[in-house]
Structures are given as C-alpha cells and as structure tokens.
Length: 116
Length: 478
Image (cartoon, rainbow over all chains, first blue to last red; front, side, top):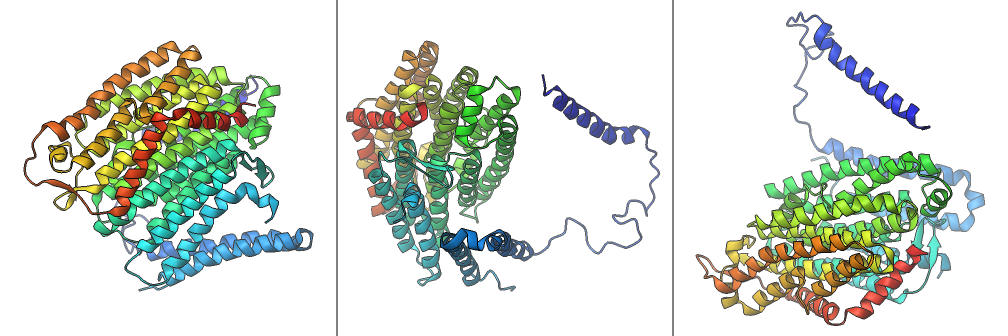
C-alpha cells in the first residue's frame, strides 16, 4: 500500500497535463492574423522552413565531439585519485585512452574530419 | 597474466579482434576486404576455443559485475558458433551484393562482444550496456545494403522499436533499484529472499520482461521481426535470429532463475501464456508467407515459444534444455538462412517460394541440405531438432505442464505444413522461367557443412551436450 501515493502522483500528473492540453481547445479564443501565425512572432522573418534540410556533417561533428567529451569526463576523476590508484589505474587509463584514440584515428583516416 | 583478467578472457579476445580489424581496415588494400573476414573469423574461433578451455572455472571481475561460470561459457560457445557461421557466409555474399566494406566485420565483432558480455553480466546495468552494444551494431548491420529501400526500412523499424523496448527495460531497472536498493543480481536476490511481494518489484520485473520479450521476439513484441528479417542482408538476418536470441535468453534465464527465484510462481503464469501465444501466432502466420525469409522469421518466433516452455518448466532439465535448444536452433537456422543466401535467380536473391520449384532436379545436394535443415526445424529424428524438442517438451511434462506440452506438439504439427511445402516445391514441381542456382562460395559451403555436422552430431548423440547444458545451468539454480 505504500506505493499508493506514487500512483496518486502519476494520476495527478496525467490529469493536470491532460487538462492543460485539452482546456485551451475549449476556452481559448482564436483570433488569428497574418502576424500571429508566423513562426517567430517577435517580428523577425524566418529565413527557411524548420523542416528544411541541413548538412549531415553537423551531426557527425557533434558525434566526434563526444569522443573527447567522454575522455575528459573520465580523466578528471582519475586525475584526482591518481596516486591512490597507482600503476594499475595508470595502465587502465592508458588502455582506455588507447581504445579511444584508435576510434579517433579510424574516424580521421576514413575522412570524417574533411568538410567537403 | 593477471588472474583478475581470466574471467574476462572471452570478452578480451572478441574485443581485441574488433580493435585489430579496425586498424587493419585503415590499411590497404582499399577495395577488397575479404581478409578482414578471415581475421574476424580467427578471432571468433579463438574465443570459442578459449571458452571451451575455461570450462569449469569460476570467477568474477569488476567487483562482481561480470561473472565467469559454466552458464556464461556455454552461451559463449553458442554465440561464437553463430558468429563464425555468419562470418563464413558473409564474405562472398557481400562481394556479390557490392557491400564489401570493413565496417561490416567490425560491427559483427562488436555485436558479438555485446552478446558475450550479456551472457556474463551479473548486474542489471551491465546487462543494459551489453544489450545496447549488441543492438546498436545490429541496427546498423540491418541497413547495411543502404541503397535498398527494404534495408532502410528494416534498420529504421528495428532501431525505433528497439529504442522503445530499451526504454521499458531501463525503467524496469529503475523500479527494481527503487525496491531493493541495488542493481547487482545477487544483492537483488538477497533482498527479495528476505522481503515480501513488493508490487514495485513485480512491476519492475514486468518491464524487464517487456525488454527481453522484444529482444527474443516473443509475442506480443514480435511485430518488428518479419520486416527486419526480410529487409536485412540475409547473413545479418541469420545473426539476428541466432546470436541476439541466444544473448537475450542468456540474460533472461540468469535474471529469472537466479535473481527472481522467489517470484517464480508469478512469472511462470505470465510466461506460460506468452509461450502459448508466441508459438501459436508464429506458426499460424508463417503458413500464409510466400517469402522464405518472412516464413523463417515467423518460424523463429514460434521457436522462441518452444524455448519459453523450458523456462516455464524450470529446474536443471528445463533450463538445460533451453540451452541445448539454443545450440540446435543456431545450427539449424544459420544453415537454413545460409542456403537461401547462397541461392540466386538471375541477379537477385532467391527468396520466393516459386524460386525453389524444381531445385532438387538441378542441384540435388543443395536441395537435400535445405530439406535437412527444414526437417530439423520441424523436429524430425535423427536431426537435432527432434532431440531439442524432445527434451523441452519432456521437461514440461515432468514439471507437470501437460497442457503446455500438448499445445506445443500440436503447434509442431502445424509447423510441419509450411516447412514441408518448401520441400514439396523443391522435389515435386517443375521450374518455370529462369533457373535458380547457387553462387560459387567455398566459405559458404563450409558453413553449411559445419551446420549439417552440428544438426547430426546433436541429433544422434544429444546426451553429452545435454549433460553439459545441465551442468551449465547449475550455477543459476544454487
């Protein structure tokens, strides 16, 4: 029975969120004008439609960035405890960096960094 | 060598080979990648031998998150057999379809690494990690022939539904953690042994079962199977059907039998229903298929239903026969897909039933091989399918699930119809139009020969392997 409260929170959240989405369709007045249906109501004309294309290269660069992101994220805690972890920790870190650098090398050699 | 690394040895061999293939892929020659297949195959065979050599040893690594026991080793062998057969079938097939790229072998090895890790995982987080490693590689492999519309559809469907199932799985882990305060399997087991039937825990287990149900493709989580199996390259289809299922069952058995032993009455009822639904839906829908890859997809769903019978029956015999059946199923299914993969009609793959009309007249050996694999899928003696089904259904009867065994036998009778239809087409019809013929591939034929050896070895002398399988599940039942 101790989880009834949890269930109640679920129910309440569903109710509130559902009501918030449903009530405006009933209550809100709809007075549209040309300016109001613009994507940016602040006055800036949109340059392109949101469903327009953009180069896939941006996403690949974002993925490559993750390599270094993860690297730094794991090096920091290791660096703080480097003396306590000793040679075993050092070797483990080297193996980890080696695997990561191999991935980086693969990406580089396969032409992942070339923009054109 | 550091003794702490010994439990990781099969993983290290597969992972090391993957890294080696990555390096080799960068070196010339650029246009031919067949040698990478040979290296990958050598690595997988090495992992197979290492697993056999480690048999009987026990150990833990990473603070008990990864475990080495006979259960993990038995599944390592099954998974490595699957990967080796797939690699043998792949090289010439890829070259024929202009898909010869180094990434293929890297992804197959990484996916194998995920499967092997899944068999050895003793922590829900590691199971999740292994599941993702395996699945992400398979999503890409499913769409490997990227010029084809069907391949893109298969990859996308597999990815979206797989990601959805992963969401269920990780939510289940969160709830179980909430109920027991740990993700380690043995600590969860200890907490449940002491505790009561916490609804939070049962909901968590249910969500885990949804995730597993998707991976092993049990009804009602089988919707992705036909489209993915049809659209993916046939070698990848064979891998999804054998390796990923073995890995899914590995984690499922470990979680259910050793961790949630206390809740056995709860999940047995659930799995009873799922097993009946899975085999019935799989077999009945397979009857209507005229595409052989789709037919084998539904038949693989049905076989998951048979294997779930062993999980329901439980005990050393039930769980042991699931492992035995996984090995049987790996040889049989990889073999059946292997024949399909070798055959082509004109410039396209022979996947329609009509393509097989009159095959026995022109290529008697190949037709006989396919017929033997299909007979093993039906469960005819003296093939391995008979021994596997005999043990599974026998375990159900011995545990008192008579009705389950009766339904399974009736299902097998239904299944005989659509398997034998292919045999009828091959032996009793005449060819119309272009003849179907096999592509030249020595490695492919070698794979078929190994699979044939497997189904006869396991069919004629099943007892020693069943003993090994029962010894393998012993650590879970302690």
